[in-house]
Length: 252
Ligand SMILES: NC(=O)c1ccc[n+]([C@@H]2O[C@H](COP(=O)([O-])OP(=O)(O)OC[C@H]3O[C@@H](n4cnc5c(N)ncnc54)[C@H](O)[C@@H]3O)[C@@H](O)[C@H]2O)c1
Image (cartoon, rainbow, N blue to C red; front, side):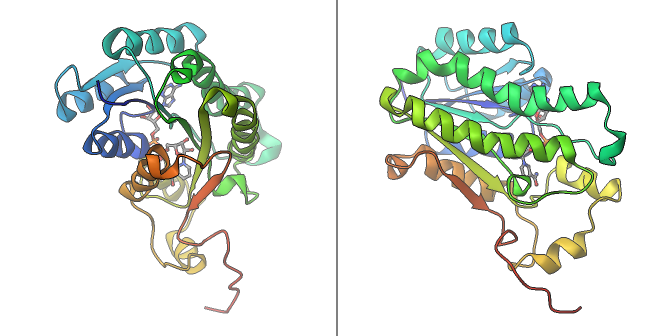
């Protein structure tokens, strides 16, 4: 049996790109998403039932996450890579934060990551070069106006990643985060639609002068999941075209 990856939020966007890439790398993949139809459709595209499966899973529900992990165990008998890509974003002035929306965003982005890590632990412990790859963000570094809950969750992801790396290293589990910049997905484009992001402002501040492609995050995940990264843990690897290091304030 090849190594096995479970990718949450895998029905679309970055999760889907990561699932595709890990399949190309020869791993079997379980694609888990609240959008079960999308997860199953991608799984069918990526291989036969012993190579890729789609699972409906809501990362906010303990039982749903536990069920997804037991499905992986039943179908593949192992788990080596967990990619936590399920995520949501809301945009509004901080002073208009509604408690219910705040709690929902924390529960999906941060609580969901914790739940998946916790449920996957027993299988990962027996894995080969086992690794958890969490999705951080430029919001882990920048204070992003109008995205209080989102930025808080993505800052939390770095603490969660470091803490699990420190605690689970002795169990043979690496824990890392990828911090994408502005990558062309529905989640990012919704910022254009809501008038919170302007593409030209992003490009002006990004040294590489373009948006990222989902495949470019998948490539980083591929490296972090591989034996080439077997001594890499606890880090946040930025793949952001340089936006978080640029001090360029020239006019124009
Ligand atoms: N796109 C970017 O520019 C960017 C930048 C930095 C970080 N990220 C992070 O990468 C991750 C993926 O983002 P994306 O751009 O692919 O978003 P996306 O909206 O395209 O995909 C997110 C996926 O998560 C799923 N999902 C949402 N809630 C869920 C839940 N409760 N349970 C299970 N699945 C759920 C959705 O159905 C969807 O398939 C997110 O954590 C996001 O914060 C994205």
